[in-house]
Image 1 (tube, rainbow, N blue to C red):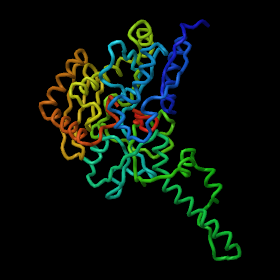
Image 2: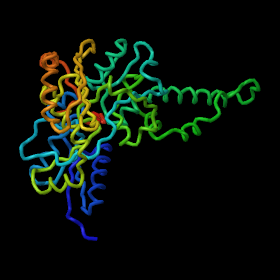
Image 3: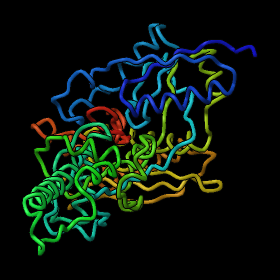
Image 4: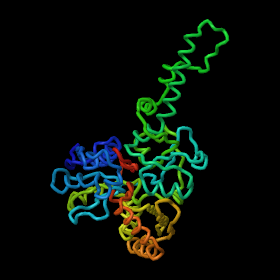
Length: 393
């Protein structure tokens, strides 16, 4: 069978980023394209001792890939949409937004506990200002601590303490059993020895056993899409968080295929673009751009196409979750860009702009920016896939 040509796709080298690029490659190969995936190390990958939100201010996980596109080294770059800056070079376009995955967040715990079931003062891990503010708005007693790493790393950090404690207890009990072989009153409390127990663990649990952990987390918050794309969603205890309360980051769950404007962009658009997903993410990103949220404020925007309108929920919070501006609006799909701009203007009048400006001032004074707003990825969220989501992602 003849092919329509060869396309070179740039991607980060994290596991999640490679999985995302592979999904794009498969869709293109179904339409008779030969596809080569090119791994690119980004600025965000090179600086591993900074929280992801610090890197996010300059699109640290996006820019290096896009430079490869603009200089002609590759034909396209695959990003988590929530990482893509709202301001892009004129010669670069988002040629395709493939069908979006579930954009919601999930609470992951070792035992399946829900948010309301976490003990008072529980430690919850996330490096997203949005997630932190939304958590504190629901549970002001929580101790929300930074958590960075790819999806596997974050899950391992959560599981490590309890698994390591159980391993130590089992090992001690097995040692006790060997020392008391002649004691008829001794009853071994487990139905498996340590080796059998270890063999029955999932791979992510085995990796967690060997991980050093500084902070013991009772729970972590991740993008559902990142867990699913990493193959971990059904290997952890994940409780969905309502998108009404935990309003996702703009573009969460979506991919963006960036190309230089031209014939290749048109071809990729024809093959990969999902009109519904593009309309939803366009509304989210227009509102983000109009409000100037960037990566400096706890800001969630979630749009869902319903018939002839795009139902859009926006939530802007203070960093401690005690103040917020929030609203929901049905935006006509035929005028969704203008409708998104009008919605953003009304939110600004209600105080959203002032809250974002206050967040910017706090950042200038030494505060922290967000890791999951556009201009920041993996995913996580889903986030930032390597030492950051990811994003994400």
